[in-house]
Length: 393
Picture (spheres, rainbow, N blue to C red):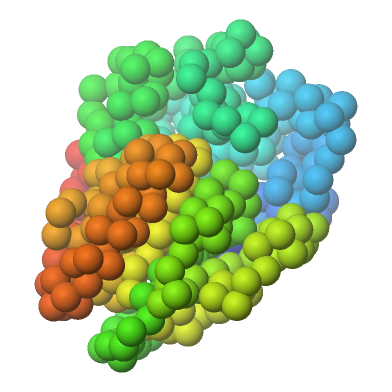
């Protein structure tokens, strides 16, 4: 059984895509699987998505997270309720009794009041693995506020997360999708009594995406850098645009793929109007990766594991990535460059380095692709998860 805040077609971020890949993969291995998620209606809905049984519960809080922007009073009240909300398990017990899971895999817990959920599972002798996709268990805003990374947990978050830290020890096992996120929670002494913990990097089922992996951009004089993802401040899009506009060369082009909040996107597009910068909107990966020489991941917040990096490698594209979060775990001298966090000067240096070594990167494209397929192999990934589950069954 899998528990998450949302499930397909309600996608809040990369965690939902990863979970969908995992659940569907486990189903193909002849496992009985069920997903428990939240939705905005006040009724319980039994659904089937690609053959996966999904039970959607109404949220036991004042609004569904990520659905719409709320004022500060509502947000503060929501997080206060979330700290310890006994009503979240009101429907869960009967579903668990009917399904009788051998193990429960808990992913994002927004709306589930994790301390209550964890305690319930432990008291009912149900082994469960907590999967760390982000820093929500430390901070409601993922340790990123007012455009900056929180260097330490503030007193407000310490108070809001007292029961999270205490009840985290109810977990049977712990998985981080990167060493960064696993170590971060352990350094704050969460899951202190949990003996079994492991890093399992995310994967993608390439067959599902029908990637045009063999298409290669023609070699010409243009040097095309690319950005793909959510257009938001924490993704560092303006850092990249500033560097590009101030320092660009005549043969440099920049493709921006993705969308974001309409007002923000409009402001960015107006501020950085330039013939060499093209905003594509949200596009299929096949309409982006084959047409760039290099992908830039300039994140300003601590990305747990940037799946843009993985996708870039699967296409054979080198990455220039920010030295933050889990990004440095993925990049080495054979697949890209790391630049100093939030440094325009260092990013520009790395973009120049890429241009100087363009012949190497063109020749190394197939090797990048090959290594990515091996490291993020979907079948091997499923096997790692199966081995993790079997430790507790």
